Image (cartoon, rainbow, N blue to C red; front, side, top):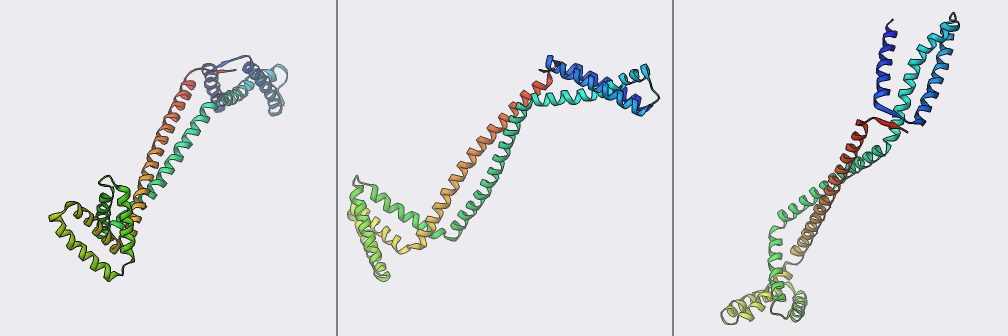
Length: 269
């Protein structure tokens, strides 16, 4: 008898769900009518097969009870499928923005890995070439400050290029002597001619840059590349974070709309 109790409970809850959760338009009513007719036919055939002794009114009477169970089951499948079809637009948008959110998370993770590598590269350059980098920056800034000063940057730029070509052509020993001579001249000029001293300081800085050569230039270029990469990665991360926040807001908005849709009686039209 337990199956009879289970069937009754199923009928009560299933019927309540069908009556309270949905509204039916003519098309859905026709579909349910077809489901009811099909359920009755199936119930008659099954009852006749399982209980061959039933005839006439007994057969059709018990078939009605069995058909109710079959009909409720079929109707639940039908209306739930119809409901899923009606909410497909909400599901599609939620799935799209959740997928977009996941893609942004993966992109941020990849950016974080690249950023960690570039930061480690920068630390390695700073630890391994700290003195050369500091000297290179200081000397380069001194040359550029003189080159851009005084309102005659173009003329001074020509002089800087000429000095650099001259210093690069000198043998190392001769260049070292030239640096010593420029340093001595600078000390003298500081006391007598400020403008001459500024020029000599730029000239001396440029000569020392040439002396420093690749020991300073290469690490500085590598560090500059690392700094540029770090800056670009941080910008990319910020952009991805904005996209992630936007995707999350859109997904939550469509989930709210879907919840609102499901909270009301759904018209099956």
